[in-house]
Length: 75
Ligand code: HEM
Image (cartoon, rainbow, N blue to C red; front, side, top):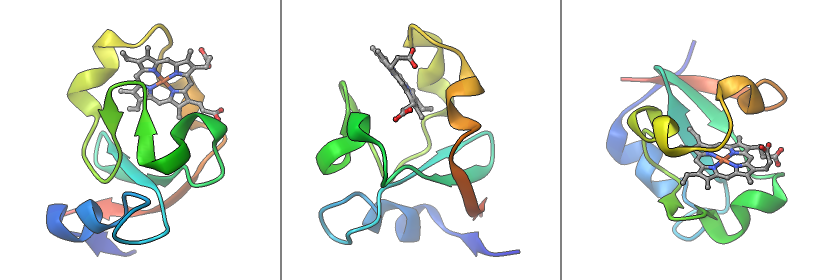
């Protein structure tokens, strides 16, 4: 299993690196393929970060993450 630090995650924001990753409840998801995360942003939420605490503001629940690949875990 691969573990990434918050600073390694922060580079995967679609700008510093091409990949667009987000962390949620300890898992890191690759959302690069999503039209809704174009240029690393999802509404006011920036990728390359742990978005666990922000899910409460969303109009959806966390089942939206099910279709995305878990690429590792947050250190
Ligand atoms: C103000 C907060 C947010 C708004 C307004 C918002 C809005 C939306 C909308 C409208 C959709 C598409 C329809 C749907 O699936 O219900 C969506 C999908 C999604 N959202 Fe959010 N969202 C918010 C926060 C978040 C957060 C915090 C996360 C991650 C922890 C997240 C992850 C996702 C994912 C992974 C999808 C599916 C994308 C796809 O299928 O391409 N959202 N969101």
